[in-house]
Length: 186
Image (spheres, rainbow, N blue to C red):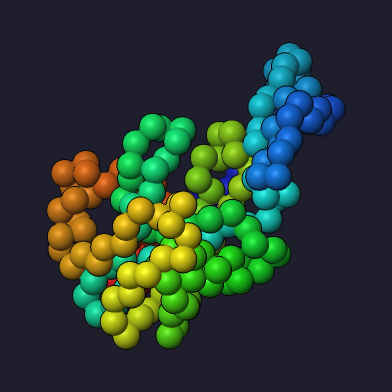
C-alpha cells in the first residue's frame, strides 16, 4: 500500500500568525487562516519549547523496561510511563540523556533513536524523538524527586499486560513500545 503524501496545496493557509500566550514551556497561537473553500477562520496551535524537539526514552535492562511514576497535573492522576521531557537545547540526544539522569538516575550504556512522533498533530506543532536506552542492570535513583515519585522495572510481558488492561495509558510509552517492536529493539 502506498502511503505517499498528497501532491496538493495545503487545505488550510495561514494569513496571520497571532501569539496569544507564552511562558517558558510553550507559546499558544490563534492564527487567522483561510480554508480550502475560501472561508476565513482561526486555528489554535501550540508550539512547545520554542519548536525544539523533546525526547521520550524507553529504558531497557535485559528483558525489563523502566517506568517512572509521576503526577500529571493536567489529568489529575498519577501515571506510570517512560521518562520524557521538553528540549534541553537543540540536540534531542542531550535532552534524552538529561531526562534519564533526572528520572532514572544514570545515563545508559547505549542510546539509540528509533522514531520521531507528533504527539497531537491536531493542535501541537511538536515532534518528540523516541529513543531506546540500554542499561546493564536496572537503575532506580532519580535525582528529581519533585517530578518522579518512583521507578519500577517490569518484564516486557508484564508491561504488555498492563498496557492491554488499560493500566498504562501514557501515549509516549505506548508509542515507544510500538516503535521498539517495529524496529526490532524489543
